[in-house]
Length: 430
Ligand code: ARG
Image 1 (tube, rainbow, N blue to C red):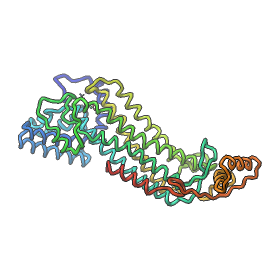
Image 2 (cartoon, rainbow, N blue to C red; image 1 turned 45 degrees about the horizontal axis):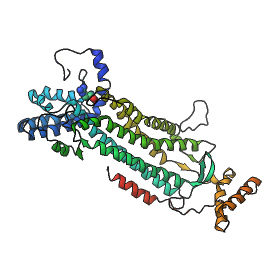
Image 3 (tube, protein in one colour; image 1 turned 60 degrees about the vertical axis):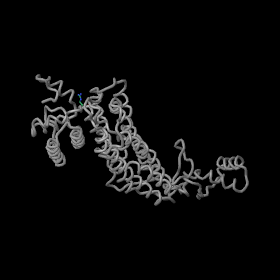
Image 4 (spheres, rainbow, N blue to C red; image 1 turned 180 degrees about the horizontal axis):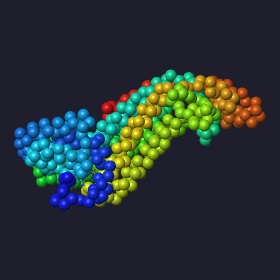
């Protein structure tokens, strides 16, 4: 039974095509749909559109549906279009006419908007929590391995000494930048669209400040048209945030794949965290990092997908918007899964501490040699030429020592300062 049914049954193929994946995806919106309805009816009673008795009957029935959802017993029946229809269907089935009153002053268009805003708000918090845990793990590893040297590369050529302290710490600080995007997306999601109805408001005296307060939103999306423009724009912000974290993870995954390669052998993992080959008995493959790289690279296409799906849509509701759920719902789960996996791997990483003793890394230390001469009073350009000549003539002998002391360098990682930066971004969302 469709909410908008007016006495004829729509073609089954048309129904399946337009409903798409909504019956499955909307299950994730169910508890938010009920929360939105609870706020809406409380407000309707306060402006005289429901009696106190009707409010308590509807509240009790909605709370029953809420428990049903929590017990995992809520489903969207075949023939019912979406979560909003299913909840209203259950209410009218149980309460008759009172159930039919709930929809005064709203439309499924603002209902889905409010569900999505509440859902995205929670998803972004989940992302923030997992990023925080990954950040802490990286900072711990950075401190633990601050003296373990490794080669730094430019152009993928041996360049200058680096350290595992720097490497782990770098990814921790990169996550701070990503968190700014997560916080921005959360701010955009944290605005109340309820009361915008089909996109142009209502002639009922709806109290939008009240529903904003009841649902814990920071502010209403005031302008009812702007509230509807928020569908698509919110997803774009969410997608950008997800893509930001994903790009950091994809980069980390690439480093790990390369460093697990025997030619580098900078890091290794316990056997049970690696995978084998069906033909080569010696293989310990980095499949986890490869799958993570692939998933996170795909996640980086999200902002584009959202942009293209919503490009040049006319103002107001258009059914294309429904497809945003197909893009964003799996994405935030995939990202959280990848973050958790990165943490599991990092908590078990083994770092080699004698890497730079290998003669192939002799030239890592040429700049150290140049700097030593400079400190003895030789002008930089002359010192550079002198060491360059030694390299060419094969007389250069490395001194495998580094004395980096400036802020952010391997001898002064500034991890507490980076932690303070992360704490202040996290405070905006958690
Ligand atoms: N399933 C729809 C969506 O996600 C709900 C809103 C339907 N509104 C409408 N006018 N068809 O967009």
